[in-house]
Image 1 (cartoon, helix red, strand yellow):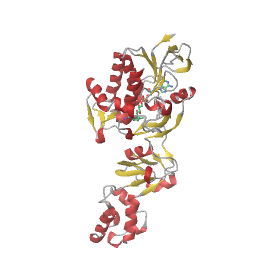
Image 2 (cartoon, helix red, strand yellow):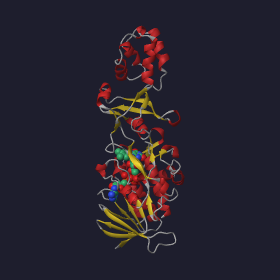
Image 3 (cartoon, helix red, strand yellow):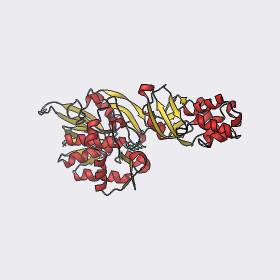
Image 4 (cartoon, protein in one colour):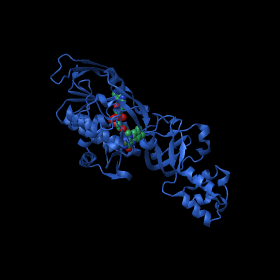
Amino acid sequence: MHKFDVVVIGAGAAGLFCAGVAGQRGLKVLVIDHSEKVAEKIRISGGGRANFTNKDVTPANFLSENPHFCRSALSRYAPKDFTELVTRHGISFHEKHKGQLFCDRSAEDLVNMLLAECAAGNVTRWQPCSVKNIRYSAAGADSTGAGSYEIDSSEGTLQTPQIVVATGGLSIPKIGATDFGYRLAQQFGLRMVAPRPALVPLTFDSAAWAPYAHLSGLALPVQIEVGAKKTKTSFLEDLLFTHRGLSGPAVLQISSYWREDTPIRLNLAPEVDLPPALSRAKATSRKLIANELAQLVPSRLADAWAGQDAAWQKPICDATDKALAQLAEKLARWELTPNGSEGYKKAEVTAGGVDTRDLSSQTMESKQPGLYFIGEVVDVTGWLGGYNFQWAWASGFACGQAL
Ligand code: FDA
C-alpha cells in the first residue's frame, strides 16, 4: 500500500500548482492524471501562449451561484503573486488588451515552471494513472475529524488522509476532460450546480441563420448584452460571424450568462451614433444607403443589412426618415435568439460544478473531511481574459496552504 499525505487528482493548472505549494511545505504529495501528458489545456490556451492571468482581477469577473465565494482565495493569491513567480522562472510575458497577460514564447514554459515547482517540493507524479474507486474510513479520525481514504488506481492501492480534486470541467473531452470530479462530489453527498458549456460560440436555427451565413469570417467590435434591465450583463468586444452562428470574444463572454430560449441583443455600431450620422448623409449624399452605411460599419455588413428591406435599397437622399430610423434601430438593437451553443467540444470552460455551499472559501475543503476541490471543477467560472487560470492558481494556493 502506497501512503501519501496528499493525493491530487488532475495534473492541470490547479492540480500542479497546488501540489507544488503543498510539497514545498514539506508534505508528501502524489499527483495522478489519466492523460499521458500533464496540463494539455495550458498548452492549447491563448493560441499556444497561455493568457495566464489578468492584471485586473476582481470577484466581479467570475460567475457563481455564490459570487462572494471566490473573494478570499483571489485576495490571498493575486495576479502579481503569479507574475512574480513567472518572472522568477525567467519567463517573459506581455500584455495584450484589457490587462490580459500572455507568455512571450510558449505556454509550454508555464507547464515547465509548474513541473519545476512540483520537483522543488519532491512531488511524485503518476500518469497515465486512472482512479477506479475511492473509499473513506472515519476510523482513527484525528482531532480535525479527518479519517483516511483508500484509492484503487491503475497503479495500485493508495492510502491518504487528504484528496484534492482538480479534474477540471467537461470542455474539450478529446484532451481528457471527464466528469470525475462531479461524480466524486456526488458520491460524498456534496451538492452540484448543473454544469453547462461557457465561453462558447452560439448557434442558430439554420433557416433563421441563412441570411447571415455568407457573413462568415466577418469580425467587428460590438456591444452585446443579455438579461432584462436589472439583471442586464453587457460586454464591448469583437464579434465574429461563423457559418453556424456567432463567435468571437463578445459572444464567448456573453455565452456564460446566456440561458436557453432567451435572446441576445447586439449593437453592431457601438462607436457611432447612427441616426444623426444617417440624417447627415441623407442631406448631403446621393449614394446608395449601403455605400453610405459602409462608411460607418464594415462594407459586408452594410451590404447585408441594406439588402434586408426594399426601403433601404435606394439612394440615401430618397430614403424616408422612418426607413433610416428603422435601419439604425436594427443595427443598434439586433435581437436574436440562439438555438444552442457549440457545446463542450468548443467551450473554453464549464460553468457550474461543485456547489460552493459545500466548500470552505478559505481552504477549498468540502464538508466531507479531507476532500478538497479546486480549479474549474468548482462552481466558479471566470470571464475570458486570463481569469480562469487566475482562479486555478488562487484556489490551488488556498488549498495547498491549508493541507
Ligand atoms: P484542467 O482542465 O487544466 O486540468 C484537469 C486535469 O485533470 C487534466 O490534466 C485532465 O487530464 C485531468 N483529469 C480529468 N479527469 C480525470 C480523471 N478521471 N482521472 C485523472 N485525471 C483526470 N483560461 C485562461 O485563463 N486563459 C486562457 O488563455 C485560456 N485559454 C483556453 C483555451 C482553450 C482551448 C480551453 C479549452 C480553455 C482555456 N482556458 C483559458 C481555460 C483554462 O484552460 C481552464 O479554466 C483551466 O485549465 C482549469 O484548470 P484546472 O486545473 O481546473 O483543470
